[in-house]
Structure formats: C-alpha cells, structure tokens
Image 1 (tube, helix red, strand yellow):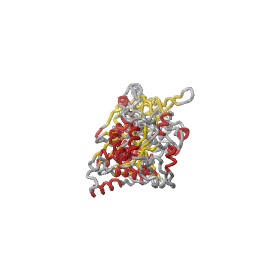
Image 2 (image 1 turned 180 degrees about the vertical axis):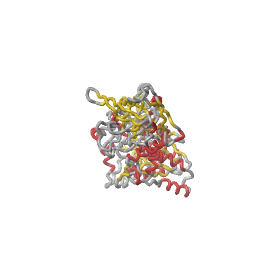
Image 3 (image 1 turned 45 degrees about the vertical axis):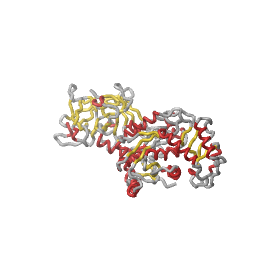
Image 4 (image 1 turned 90 degrees about the vertical axis):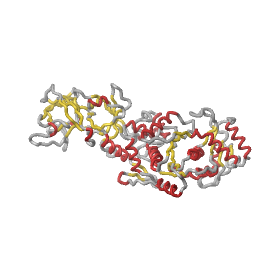
Length: 561
C-alpha cells in the first residue's frame, strides 16, 4: 500500500486530474457533453468523505455546463430506508447543490434484468448452485487461479429457465445466483465470474414485492450510468480494481457511448469515524446521541454543530483531487470553519461560567446603552446597543485573588477594562459557606468609557461581560473531537470505541449568561462569542430553554491537550 501521510495547511496544492481527462475526452470527441452522477446507497447518513464526492460530482458538471444527477443506489432493500433518502437529499441541498434529476437504481430494474437475460442469451452468464462457502473456495486467491463452477457450462436454455424460476420465487434465498462468465484465472479477483443477481425475498421500499431477485452493485452501477447517459462515472479509489468489470459489462452488452470510470482518493480525516457500520454501533450503544450528534463526522452532525456549508466546500477545494492516499488533519477543517465564520458571524457577548460583579460606585438606578460592532469585518452592518449597569457577570477565570505572573485580568493589583465600557478595580469580595467566591465588588472610573482616560493610562486586560439586570440564560454544550486516537477506524469493537473516546468531547454548562438580544435567536443562527469561539443555536432549544452549541474554539487547543 502507498505510504500514508498527513496533509497540513501549508502542504496543500489543489489539483484536479479528473478535469484533465475530461478535457482530453471533449477535445478528441469521445463525448459531446459532460454528465456525472452522485450515487449513494440509502443505508445511512452522509459524512465528510461524501462531501468530497458531492463537490467533485456536482462541481465537475457545473464547470463544463453539464448535468449531475442524484441516483440512490437502492439495490439492497435489507439495509435501505426512506429516512436515509430524505437525509441524503437534505444534505446535498445544504451543501449548496441541486441535482438535475433524482433517480433510483430501482427505476432501472426492468432494464437491468433485460441486460442479465441478454448476457445469458449470449452465453456470458449462468445460474450457479454453489453455496457461498463453496464459491469462496472455488474463487482462488491472489496467487492461485480459481476453479470453474461445475454449473458454468449449463446450456443457455437451462440458464434462462432457472433464472426465470428464480425471478418467480421458486427457490429460497441463497439457493442459486446468476454469475457472469468471464475468467476464473484472471489476476483480478473481481473478474472471476462475479455474482450479478441474487435471490432476496424482501419487500423493497419503492417496488414493493415486485422483485425477489436483485442485481449486485457491480452490475447495476455501470448499467444505471449508461441508462442515464452519464459520460464520466467518478468514484473513489477502492473501485479502481472494479473498473475492468465495469467496462466488461458495458462492452458485453454493446452499450453505445459507454461511460468512463475515473477514480480519486477518498477523503480520510484524522480523529473521525466514517464507516457506516461503526457509526451505527456508536449510535446503537448510546456512545453518541444520534447520527446528528455534533461530534459525528456526518454532514447532519456538522450542520447541527454550526459548520457552514461554505466552509466545508472550501475545505474540499483546498485539499484538491488526487489518487494519492492521504490523511487530512482535522485542524484544517476547523481552520476553514473559523476563517468563514470570522467574516460572516455576528458578534455577541456570553459568560459561560458566570461570576457576579457589583460596581459599588456606579449609580444603582442607572442603565446605560453601549454600542458595539455587530461584525467588525462588515462595517456596513453598523452597531448594536447593549445595556450596562452596576451588576454584571464576567467569567470566573477572569478574576483571581492571588494570580500568577503575567496575569492581566481582574485581581487586587490590576485595573482592567470592560469591553466597550469602563475601567474597573477590585474592591472586595463575598464568599459562600464553602469559601467559594460568589460576588466581586469593584469601583469604576466614570471618565474611562470606551477605553480613553484624561490621563491617557492604558490597561492590558480587556474582559467581556453581560448585564446581570437583563441578560438571557442558556445551556451551552462545548464540543470537541470525539476520539483521542488519530485513526479510530483501526480499532475493532465497541469496547475499543469506548476506550478511545475523548472524555472532553462534550461538556455541558448550565446557567450561562448571554446578551439579552439572543433570546430571539433562531435554530441554526451562528455567533462569535467574544474571547470564546463560534457558537450556534441548537435544535433542542425551546422558548424556556435556550441551548447553544460551540461550533469551534477561537484557536485549536486539541493538539496542546
């Protein structure tokens, strides 16, 4: 296997060999237009790896003025569900793409079945009675050729009769399969008489009980592409060894203008898990709250966490398209999120671990309005007003009685500035019966509003705050990476998942204090909380209980931890 290395920000050199191939095809006249498709199986939720495929499929069609269809590969009804179909279409729309058409592989079941019959009639397919165990034994190994099935030379008439009877439900599941007749001595195991139809007496979510035989993916895929008029079938690198089989079916069935399959490297991001089977185990064993848990690498999880679709697309674009195996540093994804939200997110003040401040010499009946930027990167948005009184909340970490050196926040020896407001100094404090500080009393300089003083003195510490008189209360969920190992996919079993979970992947803070105007925020609204990071309103919020998710911290602290 090729050496795997981690791609970091400074190493990125976006490239796109796929477009080079397409340019050659168009110039040589192989294809008069470009048409692609995104063909997920509706058996789970899309993840960050699918985002790359979506951007490649839809982006390629867009570049060449062509079409890109969404085709749900629903050839295995035992694992598929309408829930996943709906989730897939929602995720694609969220990423900013609109399919030209939405199809299902099941739309082509009649056509695919006719193709199977045509192969039988041409002597290129046969019904096989070997058990799965026997078939594995006959298949051979990478170094040893396979053995031909004793049923390989059945007559065309017998094969047609048996396949018809399979279709009519005469035989039980697993009793017989239809196989392509290719080459049992091929060095490519995929070419050793692969199964193209199996008996599966299962109701289909779209076709009901019409069928009790279903095509295998490797057979349905090229024929669905051909039926739709796809010119370039773009897929991930694990299908490279399947390309000879893809081409064999198209050639054997004499498909005009056959599609061209081009493979690209999958997106592998460290500290994430994208295997549908393993993600399902996380959900089923309640190690996460669901497929849309904001710690999951699913697109719905990232959306709920507050990742902007534009940032995800920028991430994919930065990585580029190649055939090299690589692992992308999760910090790059977070960096793309920060870069986007730094420009787009409105600013607000929030105190996550509140400590009450009382300004003793500030008039108790006075409420001032202080203007702050809605977004300093968008001056056209202007300013908003926040209220200021003698009772405020600051962060617990922003006050220490006996601080270490180079501590520039509130303490007995230092004066600090309240963001957009006044300078304050420590006066005294109150404690509870356990000795915990509950209230800090301060004095303020009435001539220091806005950070300017008549004597020109400056302070190093600036603290964010909220007005205790009218602030809103919220529950804040601080999310971090779900795993502490770089490649959790290497770990087998749920116990290993549990062993490698990051114990700090979710911290829930109750009774957080936030700007009063956030009471009216809507689900999905995103903000930068000054000095804290980027946050969004979670779908679990209600009128009486505002729940806010941390999308990403202002800086990456995971590596340091």
